[in-house]
Image (cartoon, rainbow, N blue to C red; front, side, top):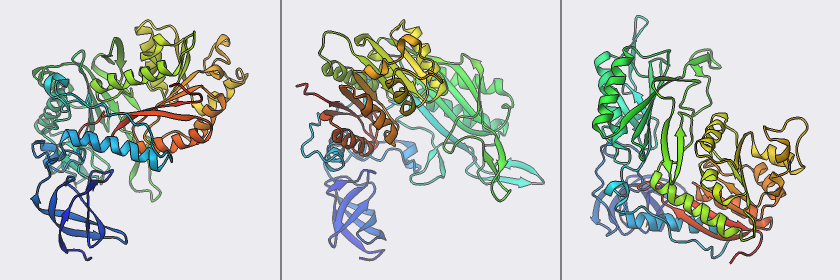
Length: 512
């Protein structure tokens, strides 16, 4: 096989990254934009030792799973977010359920794992939009097409203003007039910012010159209340003619059917220089979008949303699930597993680890004797404790720190050097935890955390994951230490993408 060769290929499966998988001359070929069942003419674009890559020249026989009705301007401009957009929603669910099952079987080493039917979105969700317009958070990259000129020491925009997302497999931004996964409020806000920057000649951040004002815009939409927060991440102290921008945002968001309640300026400056003494480098950690200082420039510092019967105040730093309809279904499944897991004559003590703003623990608080959440981000812990107060929940407490450090200390009944904010009467309660809820980031649980959980030996573990591979890795470790895999339920939190959420129940003793 050589680069440039042309073959007719039948697509048999899809990769974890959303490319179709077929074979030519006995070699696996990954072909983006294809669907299982497609027959395509493909040109080979790259050849490795055991596999190759191709591009579609022509779809000679489309699969009945193919969806060509996904109209999105962001996708047309190269946005890489919707890797399953060409696949019918029914088939998307099938592929995601299969991904969860295969990862548990292959990585965790369980021959026939009990994986329940995936919980997908329904046609009448989102006021009849189904699996579209479901995201409550949009994170836009602001640029001038990646071009800023430097003339006589003056930085000026030399390209069109772009408010959008990264292109597939690149760090190049693409302007997106619409994204049909985002709320109408987010799309309207992006249009308002784009118009404002053009009218007032506002520069955007440029990676080459390390100059420019506007870096990102984040829009958070509370679907249950209609409240919207706009966060403007800037390289400077303020935005010229800020009142005009706020008015334009307010008008645009109001016309979309929502209410702008909060405008935050997030100051992300550059400090210091790189090893060669040239380009300035950021103070923040790599990948951080928000700046070091977040100021309420207009309106409130938070917006309010609801999950079930609970209220949540959302701040700029809050970690909050992006699909509110599916979040409630996900949390219902966590609650079901906590209830099924504990059938004694008293309510369980629940540890909520990687708890974020405390939403899962608070959702389960009424079935628990006590909920203790542990989270390393201080702002999230403040949010969690405030949300407990807002909802009148008195049996939940949230602690700032690393669970892998806190659990060993309190397994011994406390720590003389520092108690992480726990009162004396709570010392040792962690060691008596009946249920541990784990909701780690994509990388999964740190080894030290799993060791700490194993040492306190809760009867049940409810594991919530956004990455089936790292989840399966951690399940394998826990099963080797005496836990039984009971079942897993996938939840489609991210329709039209290759991502899937999963809730897993593990037990030290038989439940069913």
